[in-house]
Length: 254
Image 1 (cartoon, rainbow, N blue to C red):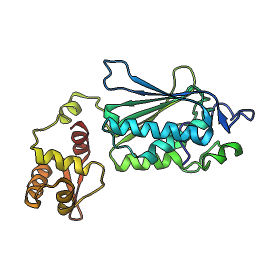
Image 2: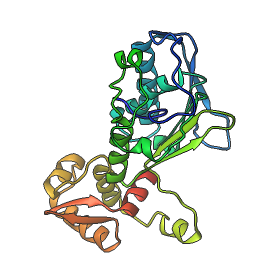
Image 3: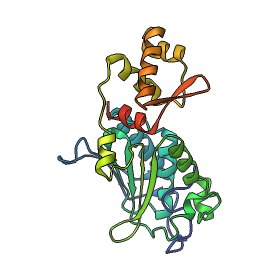
């Protein structure tokens, strides 16, 4: 599970003197219920590297899921592991958008070639790191592939003074008035909302599968599917239904 924050050609070579086996600096996880209020902050104390990475990933996943997020643990873990490339320097993980946007920030050496880190095989991992990560340049490509098939996106930027900020999100960017208008939640019946929510964590489901997951009658699921296909919220794929990008946005907003 390797390939995230500092996976490729870096501004500064990895430190040979850093103790990769026991981390002394704490990490912080900030959970934003609203951008109008201060976040709740959880501090992750240092410790053995395996445990430290696990605590960051599991606490991030737990709090994102409790907020309503559906980003899988494995995706969060892929990015969390790669704080090792930044020597775990000033790690901050921020959770937004009901758990569906997660930002991983550090103050390590930074990423010079932000496009290459999203391609398989580019890695700056040195031997001590490989006791805790794969170190073959596969992590960010895995994350990118999951997000692209789930109508999400990944963004890599430089941090304010030094380091990197990697944002993964299942919430599409809304940069124009037209996009904002298109993302407005349509009027949905209780059944239609339940069907959308059932489809959200799955790639595709059939009528009987949705009926079983929601306890909604098969005929009613058929009706909901028909209406939402016309509205552009779901589409038919091999006799099953999957969310469209707009359907994903609406489901995440429910």
